[in-house]
Amino acid sequence: MLDLFQGARLTPTQRRIAHSLVQHGPSAAYLSAAEVAELAGVSQPSVTRFAMALGYAGYPALRRELRALVAVPAAPPVTGENPMQRALRAETGHLDRVADDLEQLSTVRRAAALLAATSPLPVLGLRAAAPLAAYFGYFASKVLPDVRVLDDGGTALLDRLDQACAAGASAILVIALPRYPRETLDALREARTLGLGVVALTDSAVSPAAEHADVVLAAPVGTQLVFDLHTAPMAMAMVLLQAVCDAAPEQAQRRLEEFEATAARRHIFEA
Image (cartoon, rainbow, N blue to C red; front, top):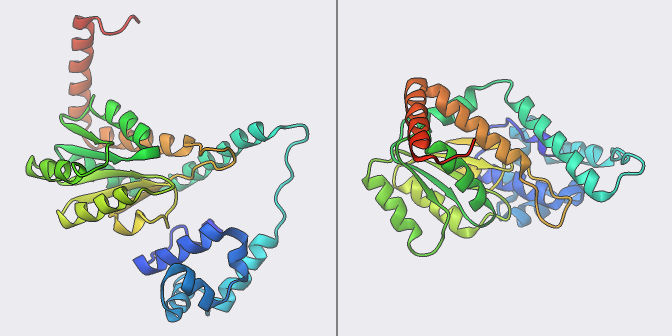
């Protein structure tokens, strides 16, 4: 179902409708326009305009397409595989989707240009996204002069955003993964109010974070285990960092060489 919305230029209201359809899965294909409107908290005409924005004559045509999609039987699991094996194999499909999206590099390059040009670079990731924010921040600090990982919520979070802006920040990387903490979305809105360019690394082009972002990098999460797998978002984070290095290659090379010299002098690594 998500493939129907990928690449479409949707308004924030239309993104909300798409997100509601994705969240309700196959059952969404049997809802009326009024029911979809109620789920998404929008008007019924907005649902019609959403369908037309996707190229359909109206919502009934879109619903027929959704029903056709959910009627396609899922591929049978490989004989003898247990649920954990299937969950991990599904990650290869997510990586394939990310790789397909990278056939055209304009989006990731636009994101990299925003992040390479800002100093400091705030990297926001709360709750489930906090480890990925720290991972990106650790490596980004090797090539950028001032990376500030914002992985704690609470009342001080917006203060730290203010401080980054006062220090000269012009953009922020926001990592927003399900279940989309309210504090993340509040911080995203505040970042826009402060005039920061926003790059959102999230699981879907129609996630709640996407409507507040200048650039959206979508990487699906695995949902077949008790807790989500973040294989594709981690891969996308490293692709983004590579693009940041490519956007400012001389600076990246110089800082990497400085780090290696410091690491050798301090005997940081054994090998």
